[in-house]
Length: 449
Image 1 (cartoon, helix red, strand yellow):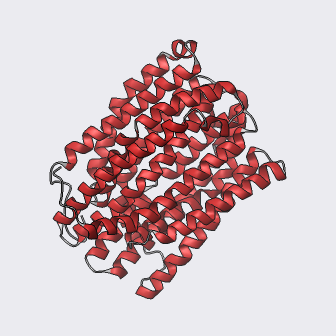
Image 2 (cartoon, rainbow, N blue to C red):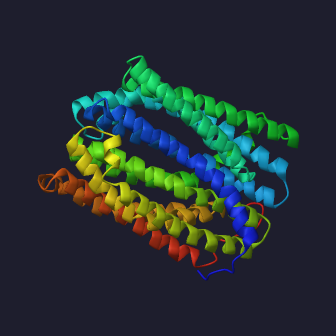
């Protein structure tokens, strides 16, 4: 992609959306890091159990991330075309869809908590803790999905400040609740799960209140309309497929870590949480990319979409490099915050070196992913992620097959190899994205794709 001339106005617009989005996005992984630290000091089995439960819970919720991403694209295109009422009604349809999907998912996850956790092959004590956490946390899934949908609408309206306030308030409350329930009341890992449910419900309530106020001002209807709910569901199918393939990759990686033993699994849990924190930080540019790309293409301005893409890709790569250097600088000190187990500390420090080196690549991937989501290029994204999963399978299964030899060389070595392979997954995505973005097939203009 050719470098676009510097446009101060465009840069300010990106920053206006990206900075609040960055602060909102890093609030969630900061909470997960705090949660890992709180649980980690209860014991290695509890931390390993949190790793299994978190992977399952995040999969159950994040397969529906199209509720945020797809809604952002649809709403932004309608705003670009000058129809705020249609934008809000489309977003409300997505919110009602979130209610239904959340209720069904919560029942299924709660009912199957223990069997789902056993799929990872972790130790008996780790599975017991994981099932406890997952069974309780499932109650918060409807709120998680409603918050996703409402956040997507607000981002499409070019409002990233309100999600920031909701995230900071909710996740701060979550940490305080966890400390009180885990240590103050002595509820252990169950207390952490209850704190999560309460905080998620509060966040969803606040976001919906703001969304309802927007809808009333625009004269948009609030009741569920079958046609709009169905459209939200159909539009989200390609992104659902894309996300299912992505979550399969993440779950496979956790499954392989579990097969290596409790120490590698516990260290992988924290390393994955750090990686998620960095991903959310870089995803701020992807959020800006979704909103700006959707609005520009909705207004028929392909040049503006390409210029913003060029700027944000550069920022993503350099931002990833800066984050990677920061992690590299603290990779040996950071593990102390999460565990008292020397073996887990050593393995985690080893993994964090690889996490740090892969961040420039992550910056590129997340930005281009946001551009293509904002462009409504969901069908291609679904195919690309399916291809990525197929190419990743032999790599991660090799680690699984070599598990005994890797662990014999030491847990730090085993976890480092696993993370090198995981970084290979990001390299595959980067190659596919580069191929797509260099052409024009993704840049379709109009209020709807």
